[in-house]
Image (tube, rainbow, N blue to C red; front, side, top):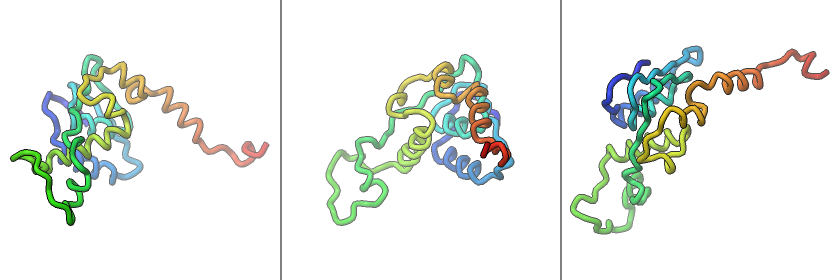
Length: 155
């Protein structure tokens, strides 16, 4: 999958891509190639690759959680029996913000969102987290989890 251009994939679309990619056959290997810098939902789609490539001078960026000051119970479960507290005239939660918050939850499986939100992440940091050029990590995992002959296991 080639990711080209500076436009960000909307959060809902990125979550849709994620659901489709997670349902793919285990034999299908996904290679994501970022030919441009990545933002928000685009970063999530790129992270979903089994192998990730990125242009050496590209960057990754995602905004802070727009709902971090909100009460999650109010957002996802409604208010129940409690009365809504006044915040301002625009205090209702935007569904796009809720989708973006979910995108950040998934990105957090790869990168620490609280530390990196609102900061530009360069390729060297992605390398440090094993997200690119991770042949050594892949080789280690492949050899560590390769099934050995039963005879050699018990010797």
